Amino acid sequence: MTQAEYMLAENYMLSCMEDSAHDKEHIYRVLYNALEIAEGEPDVDCDVLIFACLLHDIGRKEQFDNPTVCHAAAGAEKAYLFLLKNGYDELFAGHVRDCIYTHRFRKSSPPQSIEAKILFDADKLDAAGASGLARTLLYKGEVGEPLYSMLPDGTVSDGTNDQTPSFFQEYRYKLENIYDKFYTAKGAALAAGRKQAAMDFYDSLYREMSEPYINGKSRLDKIIKER
Image (cartoon, rainbow, N blue to C red; front, side, top):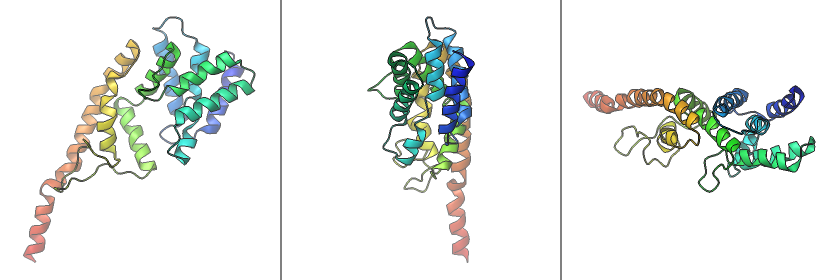
């Protein structure tokens, strides 16, 4: 890959990025994580991998504008057409497209090539640990979703079995279960090193959010009744 080729893809990526939780720095982290993972894997096509990493989230705006749209599918098609338009052959463009299409976790379309598996792992690594929780909080704030939901008994839900979107619901549904879903040994090892930080943060935040409710209502009721 030449510097001009890299800048071509980078500039297109930069023109597409608007989401604060999936910004250009997320893209660079995914790319750099992918290159680290790739060092331990044989026969990686680094040109395909770099293009796929740079372009993997260019469909985010389409999904943000219309939540029924899958950003992985939209981005895969945009990347494919972009590469064809700029002189890359269908085989290369199709390989990049396939990597992007399968980078989002879906049981129906797991990554197949080593490049696709590395992209998947590098992207999920940025959803692991403290960085993953911080990015989730950014996104939840951006779309106006709360930290937690309340249970019928007036206590804070820890997110388990919640149907209403919240940060705690996202943690229980997705973030705490991400660590056994990596395809490469290196990706899994890097994620495992981040797991405790995420657990500690969630536990601390849940405790701090829930403790005021434990006796707060009874204290308030007592004061109101006394008056």
